[in-house]
Length: 198
Image 1 (cartoon, one colour):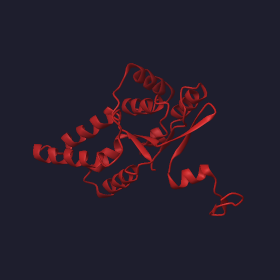
Image 2 (tube, rainbow, N blue to C red):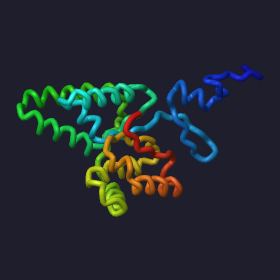
Image 3 (cartoon, rainbow, N blue to C red):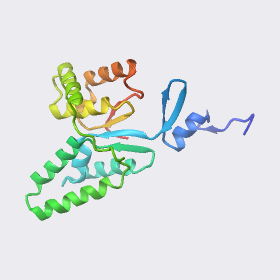
Image 4 (cartoon, rainbow, N blue to C red):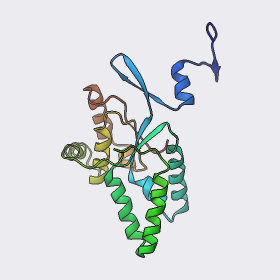
């Protein structure tokens, strides 16, 4: 209402924090304009692997993250290498073909609950492999797959979260430094945060 202040938690309710609080959306600034878009989240393997795990706490944690991603305010990206790792885990842990098929079906049912766009299963490219090598040169603790997944998230200019439980990725100075470099050079429009939960 004009001339009055709406308040929540003792703070003035502005248009920006209203959108962030009630719509769970983020601002990406391009030039002098701001566009409200869903938060783009890249998944590491641990979420998909957790969905089919026989370990109850691990499965419960993964289901919790998937339930958050089902919110329309998120756009989820699952790199093909992540999907491949999850399927390889199923084949390894479920040698019986019927069990493996049932588990893959269960994984599929969980994935379709979340908002994955048509381009939401990106493949590896030469550019991504080059970026992954750059990350590994800067951080010898990163494995090949970790570096590739991080590179895919970094080279998407609008990615905002990389969801992982891997401490090497969460604590990597090389990933943080490269993210800042890409953002400062104008190759990224949003800040990418490496997180272990949403």
